[in-house]
Amino acid sequence: MTTRQYPVHVEADGKSVQTRVLDAGSGSDLVLCIHGVGSRADRFTPLLEPLAAQGYRVLALDLPGHGFADKGTIPFTVPYCADIASKVAAQYTHSRLTVIGTSLGGQIGGYMARNTTTPVHRLAMVGTLGVVPLDEKEGANISQVILKQRGVEDCRRKLTALIHDTARVTDAWALEESRINNSAGADASFDAIGRHFEGPINDHLIAADAQRLADQGAPVGMIWGSEDTIVSAETGRASMDRLPDLPMAWIRDTGHAPYWERPAAFIDALNWIFADTVTRHGRERTF
Image 1 (tube, rainbow, N blue to C red):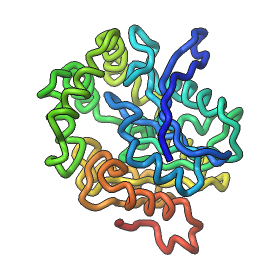
Image 2 (cartoon, rainbow, N blue to C red; image 1 turned 90 degrees about the vertical axis):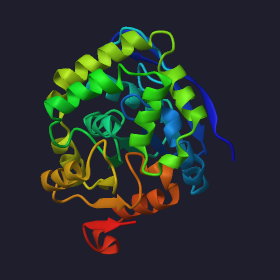
Image 3 (tube, rainbow, N blue to C red; image 1 turned 180 degrees about the vertical axis):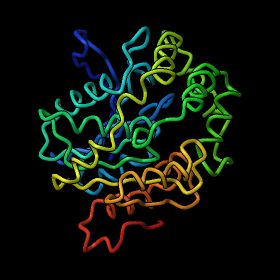
């Protein structure tokens, strides 16, 4: 089984927008993976083919201003990204839509639940933003450090914060990250994204959306890396307090990208949070 990649176009904010999609598997049981700020679709590569082998068609997309999507001056907001993600999913005939969103992608996935034209049937929020408000200083740090400092050594530091097993951060990975995040138009894109993090990021919290989706009978849950230092375990606990009815799976010995470090354990956790309450046996579990 191979993963395909190609451009996809959608209409958003009155303009044609191009993104890139990684695509594995086939069929109508669609999984859409949404990355976090400063990242790209490739982060989900270890997850795509294992999920496809279970019968899913699995997509990962580049958010606007990221990866190989359109860059430049963009109207970057959570609703804008959610609209694009929903329109990408709508291009694929499907009987069920599962969204896996990490960090900012989790907030975008929660906001997608407002779209009744392309409904979300299952939602996994991974080390997510948007359940509890982002601290003003943390928003400024994302804008001024993560988005503006994009040299090779800057990217190496970001990647060593991203994953728990820092020995897996290679020179080639840091160089690739820096080159993509400094490609044409990236400065303007990351300026726009930074303004969102220093401004209206908390205008679009999604706890109520996630709870409403769960109340409608959709499987919804959270997954967190036990050693996450980017969106901390304390934020995970606060998110559990805000959404006391949702299951939480912890992935031991992983950081902010548990699906990258331990994909098999992540898939086990995914199956667990999506199970019915009788099968799940409790609200919290470590994998």
